[in-house]
Length: 384
Image (cartoon, rainbow, N blue to C red; front, top):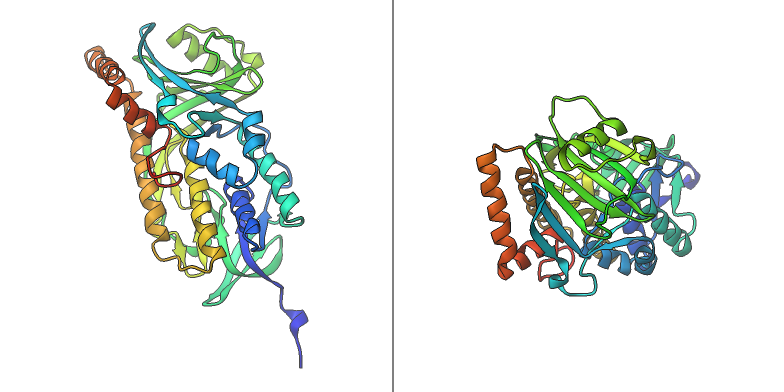
């Protein structure tokens, strides 16, 4: 006797998490004729800017996903960066040397990126996104697929992809260790109206108390990121303003702050991104420091690689090794960036500043640093 009504329908690919990485994967699969369902516990988009940096490889992937022109229209291209110490510019980095179609980092708040991707997914595959459907457990797994619970309902899928972030519920349900360590660096962050003359230039202010980073945002705003003592507890807009004034002399109005937060840093990753029919993607698989803004670009590259393999029914052999190696490289770059911005005694700080000046003065070293900072190796998107 037929009992088909007792079994849930089978998703070709079930994606947990409708952040930028999960949405991008769903779009890339839809473009290749493969249907995915995206399960998202939120019912509304987060209201603050969060990640803002889209490196050239990420911009190329957004172009492939069909939202490139919209992202360019909404974002701010950062074409150069300066290093400042004791009120003096000690180095200039010009991203034009990387060439290609995107010789810059695009500053675009994450909620805008997510909005563009949601609109594109709705255009390509209406009904793909299921909101208010929190993943609550992996029920079973076989060589043919998985059964899981989301939104209080049992679902089945040939592949389950976790794109649900650093605190991944899917990873926890698999009991997969997230190896690595917390790092000693902590930061305050705030977005304010831009009262500087820096326009579209990124600036790194090296100070004995710790680095101050500054990036332009759309809407004539500017993000400020300040390294702080890990033991300090302040995280308000006023704390950002006070520290900023003490270190670089800019006076901002705390009441004008549109977003502020405090974040710690860590470097962690799983031993494998593939566990039977479950694949961990983006921050669910590898966490690096936000300093340098590489995490989102890494996740996009994960999605591009996985979409190609799933759409062509190719083996996932080598997928995990390739993507985790890219994450390790990015994590090392992020740790170097943090190390350069840590508090130093004056005699070490002088040596650091001299080293940065020499690096900027050497065309070969400058070009290599520009490629490293923008995640743009000669091999193309996702090869970093």
